[in-house]
Every structure is written in structure tokens, then in C-alpha cells.
Image (cartoon, rainbow, N blue to C red; front, side, top):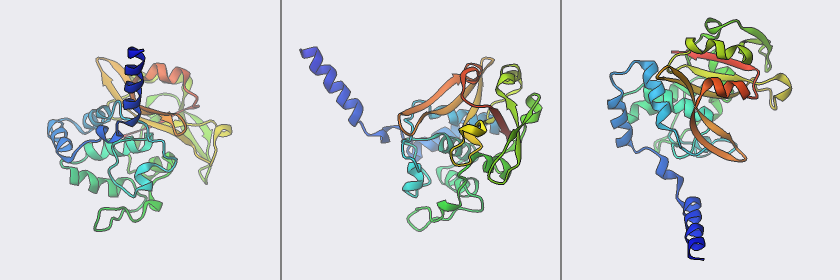
Length: 247
């Protein structure tokens, strides 16, 4: 009985520990930026992507950072915010600099904040991964350099996209590099609101193994940021293929 009570209390603690314990303070961000200062830009992106491993998945359908009009919401992340934030941190040398990068990178035009730091125009943000690719803000499209691409039906005014099909990802693994952003393309029949991209993550290469670092989960069930061998993930993934950008 005593063991049962202890287990019950432990479960309650897991439920009620605030997720904010996963968030980085500005001083922690600055220390990480100083540590990564000498890294190349791609290595910096992979470095910061890995720092989010274990962070809970953001279950807010809109995205907690959008709903709260915040630039920084590191306590829970979805796949898009994880990519946003990893790149913004990699492109800057201070926490304030990362916020400035966010105002440029996350928006089709430019983000605006009020005196309290609340975002005024998240309606102008990138809501679709394909728009991030087409904007050019998120690196150049290097999909064709990774292997033989195929045309996939587009949507939302985009007639088609060239993708690396799922079956060819394993053979292309040696050509992926640290910091590559991988956009996962949905089959046309699986699209819900015309979205072409259904997921995204960042490549980290360690000891010769190509890993995908991504916020793995769903809005309904949750999840967390994880690092998985990309070849294994791609083998069983529910996507038609990928598009890849590189800075």
C-alpha cells in the first residue's frame, strides 16, 4: 500500500510540475550562444535544435506562442516553433538578438511588437511550411541536390512541388548536412486545409549517423522533442517525401 501511495504521488508530480521548467532563461540562452559562437552557422542550428530535446509538445491548436502573442515560449513547442526558435538562436549572439531575428524570419513581411513585447501581427506569420520554403528566408531549396526528385501535386495556388520521395531518402542520407531543415510533404488525399507540408525538423549529424531532431507529437496526444535516426524515421513515416532547405 505504501508503495502504491508513493507511485500515486509521483504521478501527480509529473502531471502538476509546471512545463516552464523546460524553458531557457535569458542568461542560459546567452551562455549557450557564447558556447556556440565559434561554430559554423549550420552547426549552430543543429546545436540549438538538440538543446530542446525532451521539451514537451505544444498541444495548443493555434500554438501557445501565437495565442499568447509571444516571441519566446520555450516551455512547450510544436514542430514549426522548434524550427523557428532553433534558427533564431543560431543566427544571433544575444537573447535580444534572437527576438529581433524572429521578427524577420517568422513573418511574410516583418513582425511588430508593442512596448510590452507582445506581437501585434501574428496574422502575417508563416502558417504553412511551403510558404517558408518559397520565401527564401529559410535557406535555399537543396532538395534536387540530394537525389532524384519527383513532382507532387501542390495546392493553395502552388501547382506542384519537387520532392525527394520517401523511397529514396535512405540512399540520400550521406548528402544531408547539419542544420538542414527537412519539410515533410503530405499525400494530396491526406491534406486537411490545403497544406502541402505536414511536419518539419532539423538534421543533426553525429558520429556518422544522420539524425532528425523534431517536435514529435500531435495536438491531441502531445509528445516531446526527440532525436531519432532519420533513416529509421523516414522508413515508416506517413509522408510522401521531403523538401530540404539549407543555409
